[in-house]
Each structure stands twice: as C-alpha cells, then as structure tokens.
Image 1 (tube, rainbow, N blue to C red):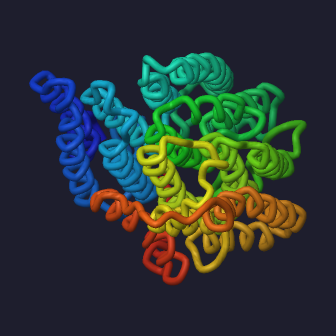
Image 2 (cartoon, rainbow, N blue to C red):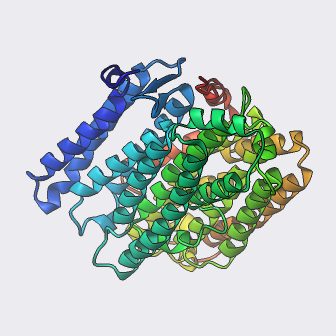
Length: 492
C-alpha cells in the first residue's frame, strides 16, 4: 500500500503525535504547579487513539508504508495493552507526591512518545523501522528514568540506563547489519525468502540471531542482560518504574515473537525450522535455559531485598523468565500463553506499584520492614496489596494463577517437563518473598486506633486494578477469546 493510502490506517499513531503536540502547546500556558493538567489532555488524546484503533479493520492484515509497518490483529491487541498501561500510569502519576516538586507537562508528553514507540514496535516488519521504534522507546525511557533531576539515585539510574541501552542497541544493530549483508534486504518477509534459498544455516546467520536476541533480552530484562533493571527501577519515579516493567517489556515480547515468527516459520508460530536452520546451537534448549536462568536468578535475588521497589524489580526479571517459557514451545499454545500472561501481568504489576506509591505518599517509606501493621493501619491498602501479591505468586483464584496455568500447560504439552518443574519451584521461591510483605502487614507491627483510607480517586483506581486481577482468575473467557482471535499473523 502506498504512503497516501497508508495514512488512513495509521490514524491511531497520528493521534498520538497530535496528542504530543497538543501537550507541548498546553504546557506553555500552565504554571509549574498547574502543569499536571497536561495529563488530562494526554488522557483525552489516548482515549481518541483507542477509539481510532477500535475502528481500524480488526480481521485483516495489511502492510503500510511500502512494507515497513503491518496492521494485524496481533499488533492491534498489543496496542490496546500499551494504551491501557499508559493511561493507568498517567492516572497513577497524578497522585504521586514525588512528582509534585517538578514540572510534569513534558513528563506526560514523553510518556505519550513512549506509547508511540511501543505502537511501532508491535507493527514493525522492517529492520530499520524495528531499530528506530526501539530507539524511540529507549531514549524516552532514559529521560523519564532520570526525571527527578534533584535526586542522585534518579540521575544515576538514567546514566546506567543510557550506558546499558547504548551497548545493547549497538549489539542489536550489528546483528541487523549481518542479516542485511546475508540477504540484501531489510524487510522481514523478503529476508525469510532469502534464508529459504540459503537452504541451511550459516555461522554468520547464527551470530546475527544471537546478537539480535541479546538486544531483545535487554528490552525484556532477561538474564544476563538484566543488570540495568534493579538500579533503574529503584531510582526512576515510581510510576515510570511501573510502566517500564509492563509496557516496554510487553513491546519487547511482541517484537521478539514477530521477528522470529516472520523469519523462520511457515503457517504455525515457530515451526521447527527456526531451530534447525541455525548452525551450531540447540536453539530450543538455549531459549528454555534462558527462561530457567532468568526466573531463578530474579527470584533468588529478590529474596535478599529490603526495598520494595528493588524487590519488585527483581520480581519483574523473574516474570520475564516465566513469560519466556512460552517462546521455545514451538506452538500456538505457547505464544497464546505469553500473550495471556502479558495482559494479566499488567493489572497485578501496576496495582502493586500503585499501592507502593500510596504507602510512600502517606507513610514516607519504601522499606519492607516499615510495612509492619500496615494491614491494620491502612486496611484498604493492605487488602489490595495482598491481592496483587497473591496474583504475582500465581495463587488461585487470581489472574496470575490462570496465566501460569497456561504457560505450564504449554510447556508440558511440548514435553519440556524439566522446565515446568523449574517454573513450579520458582513459584514456590517467589511465594516466600511476596508473603514476607503480607506477613509484615498483618502479623507484625502494632494496631492503631486511627485508620487511614486513601482518597476516593486512589481507592477507585486500586479497585479498577484489583477487580480484574480477581475476576480474570474466575472468569477469563472474554480475554481468552480476544487473545485467541489476535493470534493471526500477516503472511505474504
């Protein structure tokens, strides 16, 4: 489809661009204390983008801009996830005290720019567009991580993020250059045709895929590309920490699935040829091992943490490992499990971070030891935090249990029993450190006569996150059907 015709189907992304421009202009008319109002303009723009996305063709797969972008149900589903994550993050940010000391107009504009980058990541089918979309998300993330310029740990987080990000981008770009050198094209579908002509793996192709996978590993915080995660998550503004642990990670998985499916599979996700066409490495075992190491290291290191933000940072590494279990399964069920877990993870992870923000606003602490008696001092916060932690552990009847059930079922179906056992053992490990927080809230500390109830806005938002976390653990058919219908890929 030519560029002029492509614009008609690119309206959601154009709405995001317009929202950014509107936010920049609106911020010029607000004093610093009133700059938070830009957030409401941005939320309105995100709502319009969601409407435009809803009105785009739902059952078709169409390439835009001379084959660099694809619009299909798979990308559409992830874009709704990004919009929801971004909207919730902005609503959380509006009630975050640590942001009240800075001008936040451009903060909301930058979050919109990150959303645009994630949109492009979900739809990109050209190496150049893939790299540019990743860089949009990365550069905006660098800025947002260091947004609290007066705090040393925030600027330190941004600097570390830039260093690791530049290194991983260079590695991925070199992998892309090798792939281009082998095939003479940057379009994924044409690369697949060229690889079929090669009729077998080459060492250069293997090196290219290793380097590209390393770049994806950085985006999803997989071991051993996770070193930036704890410091960045601890130093960044807490709403940004929440968004980074959900949005870019989901975009990274979407792009990982898109690239590997397009390059190496036929009609099914991850046909066996993906592993057989690469020389010298047992790729299915490598990806499974990466998942096992990622979840294990994340959980083991989380046990040692006393700061709740760092604990959730290492926890997010472990969850990246759980999600990675679905990748080497070589079936639609594996990718279905990945997509389902990404959706339910959004609610429980953002919810947990919002409780952390609410506690920090009222009690001024992120130290787990200071959570003693919180279940009695602030019962609403205690109950919602317990719900989110139960779901992150994977206990029934929560959405996290159903998500892990699908992941483990896909792994067992593929006869990768050892990986299922490792995943189950890691869930037991995670039970220890998640329940340590619940123990502090309900079994330690003193009761107080005066109870704290968060403002109505915060209670409503926490309920909006907690209710789906429970509902999707009991009745998940609508979301399951939505994801199943989204498992349609564009094939030329």
